Length: 479
Image 1 (cartoon, one colour):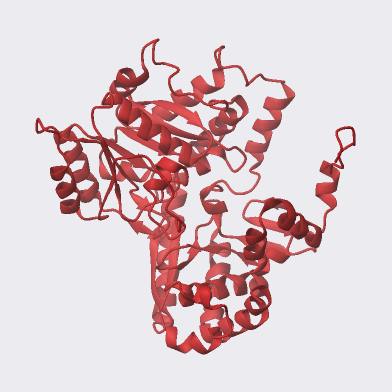
Image 2 (image 1 turned 90 degrees about the vertical axis):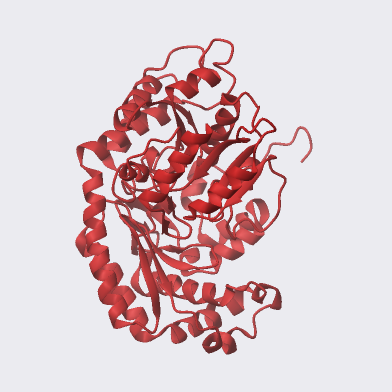
């Protein structure tokens, strides 16, 4: 394009009228060819969503899809909750201002107040940013500043997902981190649920005067990638170690927070108070990209609480007005409609359905575990039974030791979508699982729809479903 040529830009109306082939072409040319290939590997990659409401997505070709993915943690309130839409429209119609950080914001003040009312102890000071990874980075940074840079190490668990930025990514241990990026110095890991592993690391990392050289320990009380729940006693022991050694305890509930596993936050069941809490995802009501790290008052005051340090950690979009207004309404909905109770009732129903399904198909289901609105269906591993189906696939992708199991699980996810109009996902981990992580507005009949579809899948047999997926989908995509 020459300097005086008019660019050929597409419009919002063009967005509304593009077909799937044109969108795929744009992904290949301007987004990421590899991502386009992955998305098209599944039946859901052939659809276009026209609109969504509650736990349902409606496609341009007239299909009604039950969404039990929960938007990977974002949709606790479901798609387009009417009160969330109304709050955002109200904010826009009143032409509220949200850009300048040099004036007071009623929305940031009220959201901070409301969060403090829900949390125990003196967890009273949130900093609002945009993504979970940003919240984790901010938590690490304030913990380091609290110790005035005199301690060098931060500890994380060996199963963890804290984000994909350079710092948070260095503390993330999943198969999604397949490349060793540079990260911040001083990161060490311990074994999840093994308190002696934590004690050993803390004991080894000491300064010459005998004081601890660890400035923070970060832990997910419920790891959504592996669907692993830390015990209350383990969390209490972590809290005690941090108290004894002057280490700040960071609880990461970016994914599992906001009633996903029962209480507003998982740590609240353990009767502990972290020094710093990170949260995001459902906090935005499915419409707002907002996150937060929340600190106790002594930590905030020591790190950033005076005029010289109050702006030491800021971002362009932190505390943005419409995002805060959306989060205010989201939290009020959760409190008024008793979302913790919804989560506990859903857990009871899922446990009963899971028990019946495992009893019926013990040769195909290894385990169904989770809590509240976060569940993983783990399948029996039988690589030999599927090896013949996979021999025509590229050798490189077969080098992944868990690839066979991933293909089987992906086949089920694809089958649920194509044959039963159910949209879900699977975790990208060594122990791969079909995820059932619905919005908390899901009702009994919709839960039964999902489990009845699973029943049909196992009754048909995993080998047949996997064979069809490999033949009709993968061999075309990976040709």
